[in-house]
Amino acid sequence: HGKPRTASTLLFNMVGVSNFLYLMRHEPNLVSYIEPKYIKDGQPYGEYLREGPAETTKIYKTHIDLEKFLRYDAVIFTTATTSKEAAAIKSSLEKQGHDVAYVQDMERLKGGGIPRIAHDFAFGYDLPKDDEEEMVEYFSKWEILRQCCGEQMSKYWKNDLTPEVYKKVALKDHPHPFCADHDIDEIEKGFMETKLYSKLDAYPNMRPFNKPSLRDGELNGTYCSSYNERIKTQALNFYGQPLPMENIRTGNWTEEEHSIFLEGLKRHGSSKPSKIAKMLETRTVMQVYTHMKDYIQQQVQSGNDDDDELVKVMQRPALEGGDLAIGDLALAYDETGKLILVDKTSMSEIQVQVQKPSDNT
Image (cartoon, rainbow, N blue to C red):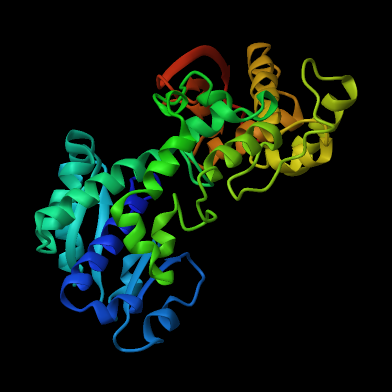
């Protein structure tokens, strides 16, 4: 369990592999009863937990509220960002009645890397030194594949690979620190040659752990480079589906495109850039984001607050007590009632202001 992007998949795989190694030494006949699964909100998790033979060890990854699992005999492994947060999470979950086995925090992971986490699990599962060494060898290569390959790779590396028209502007100045330096085919082949990979591969139910994520296909030595090439040429989305490339335009917007953009803004508001992009058919969601940001900034600078569409975009979120985010910019009212433009990356005000519209506007 854990928030997305807190190495919860590493934790999931560590739990699965540690259970596998433990059972291989103590009750090898139960290895084939290990059941890995990802559960998302809306799925019948209760049925999953109740069904199956009594010998089954169910190892589930989820991001949903753990309160739903209180009625079941579940042991919790979860993640945190800092060691302080980890202690607070463990205490809170135990007060709620959960049996918490381990809280993996990003500080500890970054400080000691895979060897430290592997040592923690080897100690917790009472595994011998050779099992721990196999885990370090296996997960050191898996960690690279996790970041640089497959459907749930690092968002920074994916943005590096993505065609220019689909690149996320906020990530363009943050290239991935090491994926470009690796021969990903060699890493994949090296991973497949580890002792632990071969042991897991002998059991069909354990093969999901031998992939960068549960969503990915089986490794074959070139799976990662092939997938990365598809991102470069087809701009795959989060679910591995190609994005349209043929009709996407770059450069200045035409009057017709801007007119459709304004109609989309009026119809769908600022929170639905994907719907505006569908209306346009010639621009990506990120291009719509950027155009919307530039348009609103121009209107604010010119004091054009009597524009009905602009009022609808800017006024309603602020009056409801929130703010409006467009890319790296946000609109909000300050304590004096002025509408201000804020740079979210530095949390500083951009010195462009207009007076808050009256209630009768």
